Length: 439
Image 1 (tube, helix red, strand yellow):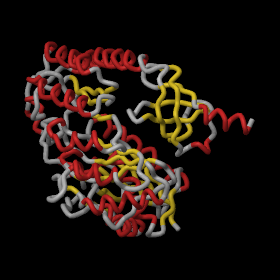
Image 2: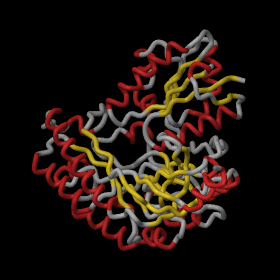
Image 3: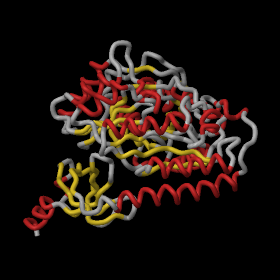
Image 4: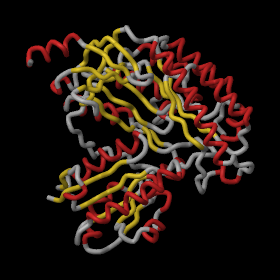
C-alpha cells in the first residue's frame, strides 16, 4: 500500500475533486494519510482564481519538498496546474507531475512513471469526462458535495475559470441520482450540488429544476443545497422547484461582483444593477425566509469612487447575510488584462476595508435579530473552540452548541442565544440531555 496526502486550496469544486482523487487512487491501493511526513505521494490541489492563491501554493510546494524521499512523488493538480501546464515543471524542479481537472483518471499511471523518474503533464480538456465510474471517497460525513456540471460557458472578463475548467457540460440526471443514492447508503443526508454556474445545468433533456426535484425526491435526503448559481439562470421553473421541494434549503450564494451597472458591463456579467435586484426579489418571493450571500470584487479596472459607492449601497439595499470580498486580481489570459485604467492597489485596498465594514454591519444587524429564535440544525463536526460542536441551519448560519461527538450527523432544534455578528451560539435540549446522562 502507498500512502497518499492531498492538500486542497480553493472552492468547493476542488474539495469535491479531492474526494474524487482519493476515491480513484483508493481503488488502486492507495491509503489516505493526513500527514505529508508519512506520505509516499503528495498532491497539492490548486486554485488559480487570484494571484495570491498561486503565490501561496508556490511557497507550500517548496515546504512540502523537505518531506520528499527517494521514490516519493510530489504533484500539482487542479486549476493552477491546468493554467500553467508544463511551465510548472520548469518553475518548480522538484515537482514530478502536473495534472488538470480533466486528467485525474491518469494519476495512477503518472504516479507510477514518476517513481521511475519520469516527469509528466496532463492538461488536456476532455469534454466527456465526468468520472462516472469513480465513487468519491467518503469519511462518514453527513453532508457531501456532488458535482453535477463542469466548466463554464460564461466569459466574465475577470475570470480564469473557462480557461482552467473548459466548456460547460452537465452530467446525466440518472447518473447524479445514482451517486446521491450511493451517498445516502453511507449515511449522507445533505448534498450540495456543484457547478460553475450550477443553475444553468442542462444535459439536453433535463434542466436544473428537474435536477432539484429528482435529488430532493431521493429517499433519505433531508437537505439540498447548490452553489454557485448565476443570476441570469433563475428561471420560473427553477424558482418553482426551489419553493416546492421541501429539502431545498433557504439559502442562495448569489455572486454580485459589483453594484455598478457600468462596472458589470465591463465585467461582462450579462445583467445590470436592476437585473440583480430583480433576481433577489424573485428569490424572496419564492422563498420568503431565504438567506442570501454573495461575492464582490473591488478595484476592477476603471472602477471609480462613484462605482464603488454604488456597490456599497447595493449591499445595504439587498441586506446580504454575508459576503466574500476581494480586490481585483489580474489573471493572464483573461480579457480584463486588456482593459485600461487599472485602480491603484492602495485605493483598492482602502475600498475593500470599507466594503468589509459595511458587509459586517449589515450581516450583524440581521443576525442580532435572529437571537432568541429556534432553528433546525445539522451537527457537522467538532468545533475548533473548546468542547463545542459546529452545526448549521437551513439558512447556512453556523451555530456552536455544547454536545457530545456522538451527535455529529444528527438534526437538532436549537435556540440561538447569541451571535458574534457572523456565527451563533445556541442550546439544544436534546444535546444537553445527553451531556447530563454522561455527566
